[in-house]
Image (cartoon, rainbow over all chains, first blue to last red; front, top):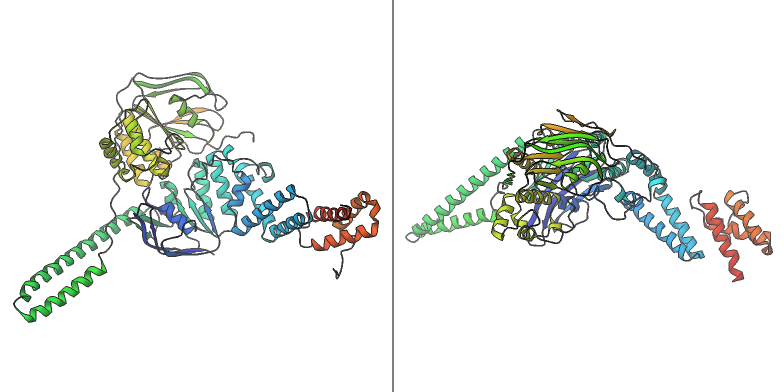
Amino acid sequence: MGYIDVTGVRHTLPDGRVLLADVSFRIGDGARAALVGENGAGKTTLLRIIAADLVPEAGSVARTGGLGVMRQFIGSVRDDTTVQRLLVDLSPPAVREAWDALEAAELALMETDDERGQMTYAHALSHWGDVGGYDAEVTWDTVTVAALGVPYDRCKYRELSTLSGGEQKRLALEALLRGPDQVLLLDEPDNYLDVPGKRWLEERLLETRKTVLFVSHDRELLARVADRVVTVEGGTAWVHGGGFVSYHEARTARHERLAELRRRWDEEHQRLVDLVRTLQQQAANSPDMANRYHAMQTRLAKFEAAGPPPERPPEQKVAMRLRGGRTGVRAVMAEQLELSGLMKPFDAEIWYGDRVGVLGANGAGKSHFLRLLAGQEVAHTGEWRLGARVVPGFFAQTHAHPEWQDRTLVDLLWHGEPGRPGVDRGRAMAALRRYGLADSGDQMFRTLSGGQQARFQILLLELSGATLLLLDEPTDNLDVLSAEALEEALTAFEGTVMAVTHDRWFARSFDRFLVFGADGRVYESAEPVFDETRVARAR
Amino acid sequence: MVLAALPTVSDLSVRSALTRLSAEFPELGHRSIVLVVRTCREELRGSPNDALPELVERLARQRLRAPAV
């Protein structure tokens, strides 16, 4: 039994902008609610407020049933966090605190083995048992076997950075879904999951009796799982009580209703203002009219004090102009190409104008293949080459650009880089505006949301003059609208596109598919193939 | 300290500690070792069963060593 009740929450950004105002909604027991909204609308902030990571400026959040939170960064952990630490962090607060006390007592005992240390350790152990720590360890064993195929004792000290993004996500999801918390907040749980992984997630979310609030941009997952949709837009949130299938229609109807209410309010406001003006003139000649004038003034003041209804949220307009250019007929050729240890040798010919979806199992070498074509160092045997006038432009999966982190977007555009000329501030701002990033021009790259970073990367591709787009999971962090804008831009792009994707909706817009099989075979398919399973490797 | 009912030597955590500590501290005499071990066992009641033998033995060893320091 668990629910979330958000009442009148308000949050202001450090720069003074109101991100959320008067946000109220309730997610009842057993609901599977999707939280959607444009990139930067405040979804993650709202989740952090619900998770009590942030204190709202006004309003409150009530919840029962114990809260389990999967944060967005799981999947891209690159520090020395271990499997054990992740599982502890995902546990209820009492288990976490008991674990920390036990660990501290163990360390103290290693330093000084005296009677006091031993008694502290014994009490910590006893407390660990009392809060259900031993039961948690049994669950963790089930979790690691399910997610990684190995018992807890064999992987607890393993660093998360040695796991793929999908494995990190799966580990966290297994822990939360099997754990005791009855309310789950999942921030982009499907990122880094391959299609079998996404299908697994859909089934688990459909069968769980827990209350789930999740952020996702995967249109297929939203359509299958969500039984209601919470939208963050225009600085507030509203709930569509149906699934994602009827969501677009409901949103359009709401926007029209808001526009109509606002229009009526403006009309009434104008009528009252006109009336006050007329009565003001008449009052100059008649004491009787003076009374009516004052009464009308009071009425107008009350009307204005009550304020207008909320405005229709502005539509996000993302206009991507990926131009490309004519290249040789054969854009990419591979002969007996084998990325060392990842797959069997394969041949491929990609033609100018092809839209190639690169599909297949996690760990099969898809991203490495794209990196190789982008000109990066990747160990391989066999031959590959790009055709005449083919200029590759690469979109990286994890946005791993440490050199960009502490620079502003305008600065990155101004300076350019090899293969991409710099542009002046005026052009930079115009381009950023088209990508819905004008307000972020002077922000550091690292402070952008995942979706904003993704849009910025696509803008860089546009400016680079690439004629071969190599996109590694480009829609993973894009909101639904931006993903649709990218699809439109790719349709208009004059050149060749190769995209690794696990986004089933996006993949259907391609016309050829190169499938990297779990058995190491790379083959062509005319239809998207989503059921390649994970590549089995020794652990 | 008066203990209402000390654990008996049939308790595994007491028995295994007694065996090893008697061999380690022959000069202290069996009776005093039994008393220390049983007291430790009582003080550590509530600890997880699997960890108890080790906890009892370590604490008792600490106390048996203490007078010699």
